[in-house]
Structures are given as C-alpha cells and as structure tokens.
Image 1 (cartoon, rainbow, N blue to C red):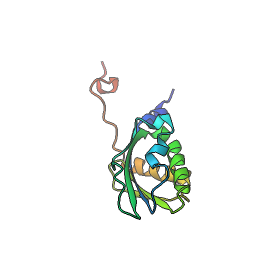
Image 2 (cartoon, rainbow, N blue to C red):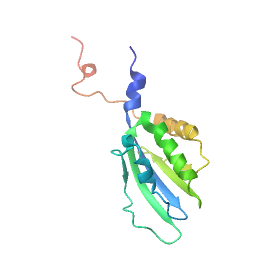
Image 3 (tube, rainbow, N blue to C red):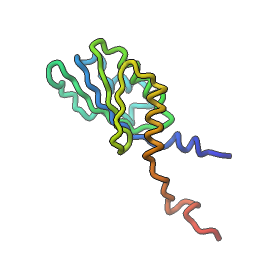
Length: 140
C-alpha cells in the first residue's frame, strides 16, 4: 500500500499571513479562523492586537497546520476577505522561503492552494532519515 500521499498531507506547513485593512475588521482574522476547532492550536496572532494607526490595521498571524488542512484554511481566508467592506489584502510567506502571495477577496482558494503547493514543492528539502527508523538501518 502506498502511503506517500497521506504522509505528505500530514507534513506541517508554516505560513505567515500579514493582513492589511483600511478599517478594523468586525471579526479579526485569527478569531474567524479559530471558529474551526482544527485551527485553534496551530494558528496564532503575533501582532498583539495593538490597534495600529488610524486608517490602517495590520496583523501578523502564524499558522502551522497539516498540508491537508490548507484548503479549509484558504476557504476561511477568502470568506473573511470578501466580507471586508473597505478592502483587505493578505501577504503570505510560505515556509522559510521569501515567496510572497498576495490574496484579496477575489482570490480563488483553489488557485491559492495550487500556488502555495507549488511553492512548497519547489522549496522542500528531501526528507532526512531518522536515526531510529528502519530505513536508516543497514540491511542485515
């Protein structure tokens, strides 16, 4: 049985989402995402909710989630963005790469998933064998 696809789906993905709003949101993005229990542990707001300057609001959110959860996360993100009457954008940094993805309320979550998945594949290092794993032991 081939479990390679499911193993990749369980690999954690680190995203940094930086939201920029013209007006404060009725529901902050992190609270919107936390409505779904599978994202509560892996999604954190690093901005401290300081309020920002008048006419400008920015939040920095870090998400470390299984790759298989990305479609749900991106659907939540797109829904939240489409409900911001004054407009909002999100810049995403994927993993440790400096690739940034601009996301607006018009962004298709499937296209976002494709772009992030491509970025992950291009920047993924080959897996390192664990010292205790069977693959690291020499054949007997």
